[in-house]
Amino acid sequence: MPWTACVLTLFPEMFPGMLGHSLVGRGLEEGRWTLDTIQIRDFAQDKHNTVDDTPCGGGAGMVMRPDVVTGGLDEAAKRYPLAKKVFLTPRGRPLTQEKVHELAEAPGVILLCGRYEGIDQRVLDEHDDIEEISIGDYVLSGGESAATVLLDACVRLLPGVIGKEASHEDESFEAGLLEYPHYTRPRVWRGREVPEVLLSGHHEKILSWRKTQAQRITQERRPDLWERYCKEIKGSA
Image (cartoon, rainbow, N blue to C red; front, side, top):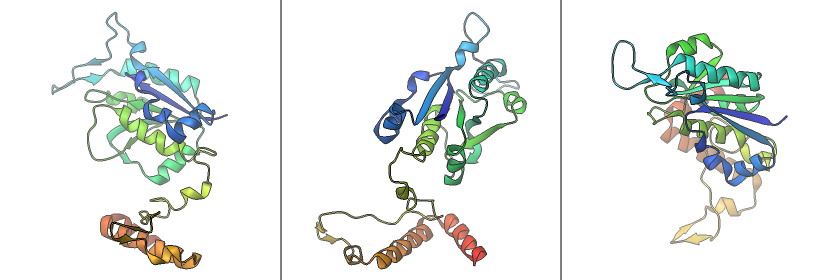
């Protein structure tokens, strides 16, 4: 069975979007993963297909109704009982490469995309197996963009999608570090030369240079990652 993504959204026409292109899109065409969308509005219970209402206690905006959202979740769980449920929200735990690996190794994911001011809290209380995940400390118009980011990160890890499994190993975050700089031809461009070590053909020296560069960049740009990396290195010593 291929890895399956089921997206609950008010805008199913947004998918596959960018996921239908490049290597991820080819993987979809080749059946290495599947994409299903569920229109949340189909589970509205009135003639106007209402999916939201005013927030209790007052406040700006609207909130997605629990009865409507749960109808969609129940349908998704019926179709994909083994898939992990995820709600994309700014208040969720940050998406990490470690979490991406975990989701990619599962049978699939069910992604709930909120709109307006969010969804009724009782949905999350009722479905306590939903994991709340954030792709960053900022607010989007809806969860669809976040769902696309999460799916792109997961699908590229699936067997056969990227091609060379070794290409994952040197990427940012895989070893707890940001990625080292890359160079290609021409050897000299606008007075800037490719580092000599990369042209030496000395494999061990190249690996050492790349590791040093990755450490330097991580220390400069992401002190939080650098601190964690140093702790892990010290703990494994």
